[in-house]
Structure formats: C-alpha cells, structure tokens
Amino acid sequence: MTNIYDKAHDLAKSLQESPEVQDITSALKLIEADAESKRMLDDFRTRQMTIQQRIMSGDMPPQEEMEQMEKLFEVLSLNLNIRRLFDAEQRLSVIIQDVNKIISDSLANMYGQG
Image 1 (cartoon, helix red, strand yellow):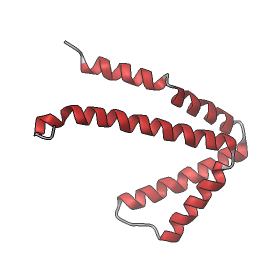
Image 2 (cartoon, one colour):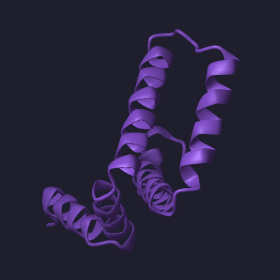
Image 3 (spheres, rainbow, N blue to C red):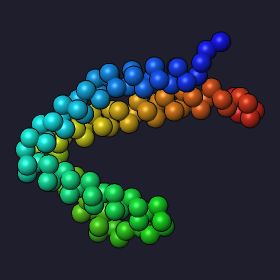
Image 4 (cartoon, rainbow, N blue to C red):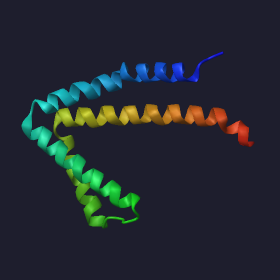
C-alpha cells in the first residue's frame, strides 16, 4: 500500500529540484545583491499583499489603484532579474495549479462528477 505522505514528500522534493524553483532561487540571489532591485521588489510585494488583503476582506481597491499596480509591474519587469523572477514564479504557479487539478480530478468521481 502506498503511503500518501511519502508521495507528498516526494512531490515536494521534486518541486524543490525543479528548474522553476531553481530559477526563482537564482533570481532572488541576484536581486538580493542589488539594493535598488531589492527595494523595488520589496515595495511591490508589500503593496501587492496590502491589496490582496483588502480584496479578501471585501474591500475592492479603486480601478486607479489597480492600474497603478499594473504599471508598477510593467516597470519592474524591465529589470531583467525581476523579470526572470516573475517568469519563474508564473511557471511554478502553473505547475501547482496543474497538480491541484490532477488531484481534484482524481477525486471527482467520489461525488458523482467523474
């Protein structure tokens, strides 16, 4: 019989060794070495988290604020190291969504959906 927790740990190890995670780690090291890039990314992440918390609490930010964040994202993406980070994070996000869908789909038949 398969131990589900062993499989989950195997999956976690595979993710940690994936090119996407390696790219994230490399990009973060380069960003950490550049004070201006680090400051810009930290500022963006702080603003991003604040907006996400507001949305989760039911307080939708004004359209203008959302547009400012999009513009800030575009400006940050001009920095090659930050762009590399954003791209790798996006690729990792797709993998996690795909794995979640595989797991969800495998259980759908329990509820007559499969």
